[in-house]
Amino acid sequence: MKASLKLLGLLGSLLLSLSSMATTFEEGKDYVRVEGFNESHTPVLREFFSYNCPHCYRMDHTIEETVGLVANEVRFERTPVGAGRKPWQMSQLAYYLAQTFKVTAQTHGAIFKQVQQVAPFQSEADVKQFFVSQGLKADELDKALASSDRKLAMMTFDTETQLSGIRGVPSLLVNGKYMLNIQGRSSSEIAELVQYLVKQ
Image 1: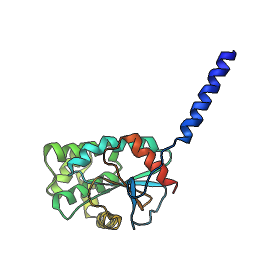
Image 2: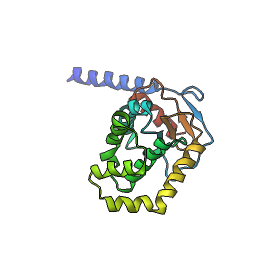
Image 3: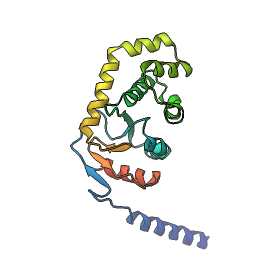
Image 4: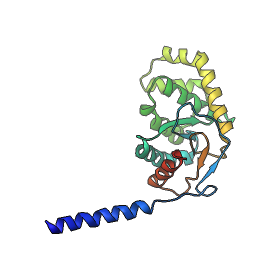
């Protein structure tokens, strides 16, 4: 009994020492403050990405793991980047449709594979065909493609990208004002940085 209590005491001391060694992060090194924009909901972690970006494709698993680690503390959003390029804009359109029909969880990885391993979308017809292959109805897709919501969504994506001040993708932004340095970091390290910044 005494040995058990002694062990518990040692564990408690260890936990206290570990908590006191919490990582501190440095502005300009671990993150930068940007002019950014006001998020409608906070705390929020926003990823700027493109299905056409090979680095985004390679980083997707790490970012998904990061989101899983902070899911109870932070709302996660994505902004697809068009970069003034037709194939990238078609990927923006694909993301808009996935969100509209609430099939993002089902199609996110599939869109990445289509664009990175098969061929990028070159036209609306390509995007529509992809979603038909995912089980959506052609007439409902046509309505979404012709809607005013589509134009508004595209404008919002481009505005958020412009205001964020990102220089490349993937980029992670916390609360619309803290841009993370994720280079060489694991999902747990990124999650720790996110948790630090949402408290700032």
